[in-house]
Structures are given as C-alpha cells and as structure tokens.
Amino acid sequence: MSLPPVSVQAATDRFRLLVDAVQDYGIFMLDPQGVVVSWNTGAQRIKQYRPEEVIGRHFSLFYPAEAIAAEWPAEELRRAARDGRFEEEGWRIRKDGTRFWANVVITALKDKSGVLTGFGKVTRDLTERRIHEEAVRESEQRFRLLVESVRDYAIFMLSPEGIIESWNSGAQLIKGYSAQEVIGRHFSMFYRPEDLATDLPGRELETALAAGRAEEEGWRVRRDGSVFWANVVISPVYDAARQLRGFAKVTRDMSERRRLHELENSSKRMSEFLAMLAHELRNPLAPIRNAVTILQLEPSPSPMVRSSRDMIDRQLSHMTRLVDDLLDVGRLTTGKIRFKAETVSYAQVVARSVEAVRPLMDARRHQLTVDMPDSGLWVQGDATRLAQVLQNLLTNAAKYTPEGGLIELKVWQEGAQLHTSVRDNGAGLSAQAINQIFELFSQGDAQTAAKESGLGIGLTLARSLVEMHGGALGASSPGPGQGSTFSFFLPHAGTTGGSAADMPAPSPSPVIMVVDDNRDAANSLAEILRLMDCQVKVAYDGPSGLELARRQLPQVMMLDIGMPNMNGYEVLAALRALPGGNRVTVAALTGYGTDEDKSRAAAAGFDAHLTKPLDFSALQEFLQSAGVMS
Image 1 (cartoon, rainbow, N blue to C red):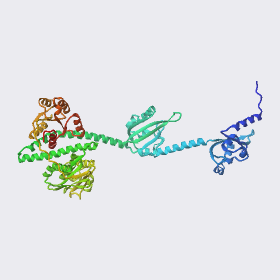
Image 2: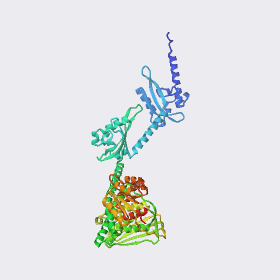
Image 3: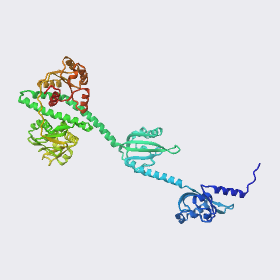
C-alpha cells in the first residue's frame, strides 16, 4: 500500500510546527537587511520577547551597546553571506536588559538562482556552561598562582617522556634555572653522571607508573654544578579517559635536615667515644689515686716524698677533672646531662670548691680571699653541679693569673637571687675573647691560651650548668693584662641562721671485700681501707670473690663491673643467692659514670655506684652510708 502524497504546504506547516515547538534553541528568520521575520517558542523563552514585540525589528536589539557601536551585527551578516555560515559565542541582551552567554549560528538563505533571500539564526543560551567554565578557569588560575608562589618546593610538570613543561618559582630558587632555561628539556639534567649511568630518571618514571607514586631521597645537581640533598615525589597525571598526560614532580631541598641528621649521628658517636675514653682513662687513674691517698695517710713522710706526693695529687686532680669534663660535654651535646634539685647549703658548695682548687692555687702562691655572709645561704639546686661550676671558675682564674696573683671569690644575695663572682688580676680578656670564651673548645685569646693547657670546655660546662639552674653566667674585663671577672646568679635563694654540721670522723668496719681484676687498683684501694682501720679481703676475679664470701660474708663489698669471664652484675646475682647475701652492702666500682650507668646499677641491685678514680671523700661517704664508719 502506498502512502498518499504530502503537499508542499502541509510539509511546510509541519516544519513550522516542529521549529516552533523547540524550547532550548531560539530559531528565527531574518530578511537580507537583518529584520526579524519569524520567532519560535525557544526564542521567546531565551530572549523574553513575544513575537509581536520583535517581528519587524532589526536583530541588533539583542546585542550589547559596545557590539552595536562596533557594527558587529552587520559584520556577522556580511560574513554569513560571504561564507554561507557564521558561528560565534558572545554576550547578548534579553528584554529585561540582563545579559546571557549565547552560541549563535547564522546561515545565509539563497534561492535557486543564488540570490540572498535572508538568514536563518539559531541561538542557544550557554550561560550556565560559561559560568562553570569560568569557575574552572578561575580555579585553575588560582591553583596556578598558588603553585607559582610556592618557594620551598620545586613543582613542575613533565610530559610522558619526561620533558619539562612547567616551572614554578620554588623550582627556580632551589635549582637555579629560570623557566626559559629548562622548559622543553629532559628532567634528567638535574641528575649526577653516576645516576644517569644507571638510568635513575627512567626508573623513577617507571616506578611512578607501576605504583602510582615514586618517592626518593638523593643528590641532585643545581645550575651552578653544586649538589643538594633532595626529597623527590613523582606522580603520574591522567585525563578523564585515563590517558597518561605526564607527571607531576615535587622536589624539596633537604640539605639542612640531612646536615643536622649527620651532626646528630656524629654527636652521638662522639658522646659514645667520650664515654668510652673517660672509662678507659679512669681505670688507670684509679690505682694512681689510691696510691696518692696511701701516701697522704703515711704519718711521717720525708720532705721529698711529701713534695712529690702533693705534685702528683695536683696533677691527678687536674687530669680527673679533664676526664669528667670530657664526659659531661658528651652529655651536654645529647641533652642527657641531669641534675638533682634540692635545698643546698651554699657555704658547703663554696668550701668544697675552694678545697678542690686549693692545691693549684698554693702551687702558684695565689692569694685567695672569700667574701660571703656569715648567715647560712641556701639555694635550690644540685650541690655537685654547683660545685663543678664554681670549681671551673676558680680553676680558670688560677690558670690565667700569674704566680703571687690575687683571686677574690665574693658571694652576696639580692632578693631571691644569689650572686657569685670570681675576680682575678691575671691575663684579662679582649672584647673579642669575651664573646668567644663560652663556646665549646674555645680558649679565649690565642696568645694567652697557648701558655696554658686545657680543652676549652670548662666554661661551656659552667654556663650550661648555671642555665640549667635557671641562672646566667657572664664575663667582663677591662682588657688584656688587666684581670677578669666571671659572675653568675642563681634564683630561689634564701638565708638561715644555722650552719652545716661537721662531718663525723671515720670508724673501723668489720670486713670489707674488694673485687677487681685490675690488681693495682684492688691492692691500692685495699691499702687505703686498711689505713682507715678496716679489715679488708681482696679478690681479683668474680669466682674468687664469691668463694671468699661463702667462707665469710663481708659487711661491705666493692665490686668492679667490667671484669672478664664473670662481670660484676653476675657476681652480684650469685652473691644475693648466698645465705645472708641480701644483707651485704654492695657498691658498683666502675669507670662508667653516666646517669644511665647509675640507673642500670641500681636496677641490678647495687646499693651504691662509685666512679673510678675513686675520690676519698666519696669513699668516706659510702662507708658512712653503709654503717661501717661513723
């Protein structure tokens, strides 16, 4: 069956109905001069004009004033007539005067003979799309500006082949290249020859593709040829269709962090070395100190023996102080130096410090005067550390004051602050030296320092210890050859009318056992104890000491830690297992004297920790605490 023919008029009417029903497009006709001759529903919805309001009017009424002034509507028609079609996007005006972003297509209409009969115009409102695109563009622009302004990170894009496509200010700052110098070049230009030989750049891109991200730290090369330690992150970038667009590369200069890390490791190794060195030095110093103590306990030494004994004592004290300073500087650099804060009699601190330095001052015939209040001065702090501060200052004054010189120690209180000064008439200090003497290993003026021995750490320790107590230490001097003054203050000070009790005299003890594989150290310590009216037994290894203890338990045992075959910890455990072994007071005798060493000894069950070389006053104090001396 054949369909009935459709008339041209009917087809035309149907097409007109179809065009009129379109809502999303403004479709209308213009005559050759641009006058509107038809208007569909979509045109009315988009432009807000009813047909009777717009038909017969020139289509330029939809254009902004600036476009009309530029005769742009006429130009559009001219191009459409010339080319048959014209398309553009731009601002148009609705009836209410508001603007919308329009996509416009103008088509020239010609009859069979090619004569222009008018134009067909289709307009679409793309305002929402433009707003979205503008938002995306602004977001991209803000992100671009953000990336460009970052100075701590080199952020740049690579093509899939590794060609540099963008370059931010951080990249220029870190690597030294301008954008013009690097864009278009391969990013392998930043790698060292040895890394290029192993194709590190290529392997990084392969890792990023396989794992979704590649991160590495290593040396990279700047424009001037210098290298820096870099943290590098490379991430692949894909488009919406998951096609590889390239790589984002972020580089950070970590040279300073690496340097600090290396310094930290170096400091740790140095501290470990200093601790071991101090231990190894203390072991031979122990028997020497014991021998000197024996000589000091001799009732009637000859003048030559007395002179030699005192000289050895002074030099041994100096060497012991250097060993202690070495260990303390290691603790300072690692932040492990500790102190115990308690109420301290400052008169005892001063007396202890003066007593320690007196042999050095007497040897140089210095005149020392001490000026401090008669009433008791008390301060919150660590007595041992405060004595260390004052001893270092007095030793420093004695070293740099010529024979027969004057040294003055003055103590006074202002409010809750306790002030101490040590003044001398010795070598003095230049202005430059005053700014340097508290630096580690500094010894002040070179010419003056060359005349005296020392490690240049005593004043550093003194200042650090004062600051740990909440105070401050400084120095002043009129100039070289005019003496100097070191002063410090401590907070939390007070006064009382009382005085410290005299130290009780020693009394005999029943049995004390010394166990040490260093025969000289063991024998000399035993001799000291005998001169103190103690009964002493000696063993040179752990098993021998335990055998003696099984025969007769001592009241006190002084036990070396670092013995071969059976160390002090093992001996202690076996001793405690003996009947009555828990009643023995046991002191760890060792060259290791850090807070960690003391804590470990206490945790193992030692009652005391005595550091070699053993100070006589420390020995007395231990024996008193053990109840074998009064």
